[in-house]
Length: 253
Image (tube, rainbow, N blue to C red):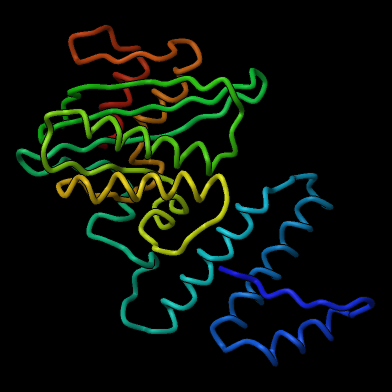
């Protein structure tokens, strides 16, 4: 999404917009208007709620909203998810088909410790855990960046595994849609998205799916445990924290 700039000193907002209207086609006008709206929303969050937002997140949110709006205008589906695939939006965890593997991912932030955590769990068609992995990053990341890094770690993890027919699940809609989209994004978040896109085509048996938080309890608990049990990989025979074992059952409820 490229925003046209207008040179000139002392130019008012209305004059700038008139120039945009004169120089851009309808599609570009929609993009500019949507980014302006997203910037205004971020400005209000900063002024009224003291919540700052990175520029790449503002632009990514604007793009997501615009894609949803354009999708709704086409009236080809009642789905709320643009570029949706079968299984998107599940509210409880669903077992994969026989011979398939599902890898759920999530991220957690520990701002007081300047740390971020990632949890990955692979389960089979019986719902049994095959492998799990937790990663601790000594940096407080933005939520969206942490989530897309979690997806990248899952794709790298499955690339080295013997598994076939894998579905990677994330509860971050923005990250999933950004990876599915072909729109270039010139930002740290965009570079990580590009890396995820690179990993996907190389594994024709791997797909990416969006699920609700309620269907992602296991990966969430693993991400939360990452600060206390950093950088570990284990299987079902290993000692599993009680809260993760409970979550394995709760996901299926």
